[in-house]
Amino acid sequence: MVTYPRLIAIFAVLAAATLAWDVTVSWHWPLYHDAQIFYFGGNLVLHGGLPYRDLFIMDFPLIFVINAAAIALLSWLGADLGMRVADLLGLLALGIAIYQFFKGECRRTGIAAALLFACYHIALGPMIANQRDFWMLPFLVAGCHFFANYLEDSDGQSRRNLLISGVCVGAAMMIKPLPVVLPPMLFLIRPHLRAWRTLAVDVVVLGMGVVIAALPFIMWFAARGALGDVIRVLRYLPIYSRYGPRPSILADAEKIFVVATLACLVAASTARGSIRTGVLLAGCLYGLAHFYFQAFPWPQRLHPLRVFVILLVFYNLRRLAGAQLLPKLATATALAAALVVCSPAVLADPRRPDADQARREYAKRAMREADLARAFTLAASDPARPDDGLTMHFFDTVEGFYYHQAALHATTPSNCFSPSIFFVEPQEPAVQALQRRCIAQLRRSPPKLIVIAGFSYPYFDRYYVILDNPLMRSFLDEGYRLVVDRGDYYRIYARTARSR
Image (cartoon, rainbow, N blue to C red; front, side, top):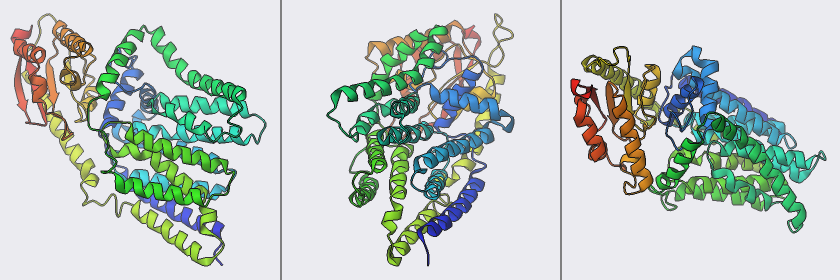
């Protein structure tokens, strides 16, 4: 007779085989989408630069430190393969966190859950690799694990577990600030919620953990004299967050309906007093908040919701399978279907547009490299700086010029590469100050090339909005000429003798 341990062991073996297949199919993926920005920031950090001082960006700093560590350890593999390995190491870290969460329930089930999510993550395509939402997951799951330990108080060290949970949640907040809403959800599970004095002490302990995670970054920026740059970014962050469409509940009804149904099914069948199920339900609630509190419904922003739903189902899988043969067969069928959906045969089929991203990106990268090489030969030299080398500045989001700036070791006098400061809320004094600062930096030491990339987002305005900005237009007219015109994709301007 098929027992539950045997069923989950068979699934784990099949999931491991599927994962090996997924890794083989994805091995050639290039740096893609936002991952190029984080790679560029990590490269800056590795060479002594600082986020916000040398790169004006709204992303929180831990993602750049992670990328810097990956570059330092894996650069010998090349940028693309090195960061591909880094993404897989992130899956390994998440798998360890999941295994620890399941350690008291069923280790095999924890391994199976980790393998299924790894298959799912890879099968979603190269756009998901090395995203911030993915790198948050090991910290979020570890934070939930230690919070569950605190609630269970099985080892008599509840406050220590709570402190570690705070450190993990704080680390996730150093990638994106949204996990600030997770601890209140978790504390609602706490027994004796009306014991206010004890509750206040516990909140302070968890808060100390968050501070411990944030303190090294504050000290880093203070020691390098970059706190003013951090404040400048924080002033711009509320303005930038107003830009872009919010995810629509109706537009994503099919995803949320499936998630809510699974969560309700598990919650309804859960025995009272299951602390870890409650923690996972809080994680699912946080996953919904993580998706809907952000502008632009990118698929990677569903990652926290995905992982917590998978963990919620797998943590209760033994009871859902039941003791009878029919529930076991239904469970086995569902698990097999999940593997099929998460395999390259479906989500990474070579005929699908998202599976073709890697091939298209390599072709587009070669085109950009050729255009940049030709543009550099057309740029006028500067007698005042005969050895200025490869100087280039670009305004780009995710088209790929972050990668080229790092690969060419090109230098630039300005730290602002985001085109958004030239059209997002231009009437705001803080935005106008950023525009003047960026153009003043470029005027002091005009680079050989200026690249203006078109946006890949269909509901953003195109590159011409930047060119309509009076400051940008006058700067280009002073000493640059158009040498490469790729339409809505990008334009490259080369320095002329007038800019000297």
